[in-house]
Length: 94
Image 1 (spheres, helix red, strand yellow):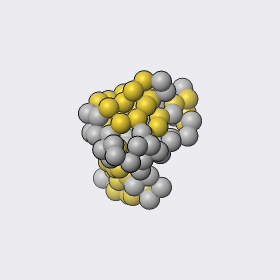
Image 2 (cartoon, rainbow, N blue to C red; image 1 turned 90 degrees about the vertical axis):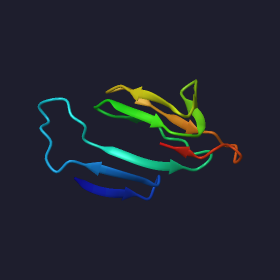
Image 3 (cartoon, rainbow, N blue to C red; image 1 turned 180 degrees about the horizontal axis):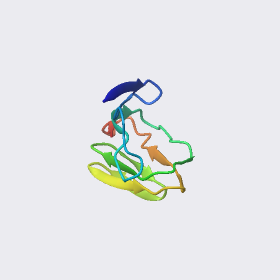
Image 4 (cartoon, rainbow, N blue to C red; image 1 turned 180 degrees about the vertical axis):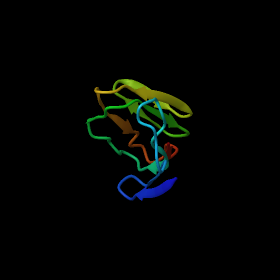
């Protein structure tokens, strides 16, 4: 496993050294905290993303997100989510 840290969104990511891309597999696992008011800009990926929110509040499109909960981002679809801007809300841990 390779580990690297994104300072942009304070997330640790883990990637396998060699993954067989001919079959379904997990190729990234991460853990991090996002600041109040953080907006994930619209992004399109070519894979499924299971996003598990441990704590915090926000929205995934028009749906309220209140951790603990999970949502799935589907491939080749534009996705965005937003962390609650209230500084009294629990931190968004994902």
